[in-house]
Each structure stands twice: as C-alpha cells, then as structure tokens.
Image 1 (cartoon, rainbow, N blue to C red):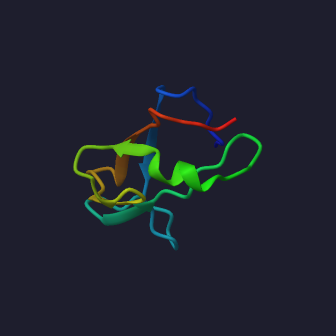
Image 2 (image 1 turned 90 degrees about the vertical axis):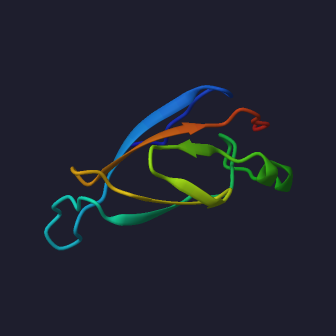
Length: 92
C-alpha cells in the first residue's frame, strides 16, 4: 500500500491492524504508538519550514503527545481507524 497522495485539505482514511510478529494474528486492545515522519514533497525534498505544518491524525481513542507522536489502543479486532489530514501544505 501507499504511498498515498492527496491534495491539501483532503483526507486519507486508513485502517491499521496491529499483529503479533510471530503468529501474524491481530492484537485486540493493545497499546500502540504512531510516529509521523517529517514532511517531504512529491520530489522527496524536505524544507524546515514544513515542520510546523504537520499531517494530523484523527482517530477515536488516540491522542497526540507531540505533533509527530500519537498513542492509543487497538479495537476488538486489533485495528485502529485513522484519518490523516494536512490543511496547510507547501510542498511543490
């Protein structure tokens, strides 16, 4: 899957499944962390000015401890449903 591409202001909806690395079975009600990498444009370039305009993640039960670090718990199926959004992109 991916890379996903969207226009500024559009949303990307994802379902993430957390699995056991040995059995590959989903892990319900499991604590998880999600880290957002620094922004790059479609040419793979990064500018420091973009660090204050990060992608946001919206998901029931997840919270952000910083703009790039989210924590939460998976659901009964070992999944988290994420909505990624970037309202103020500058990438060229």
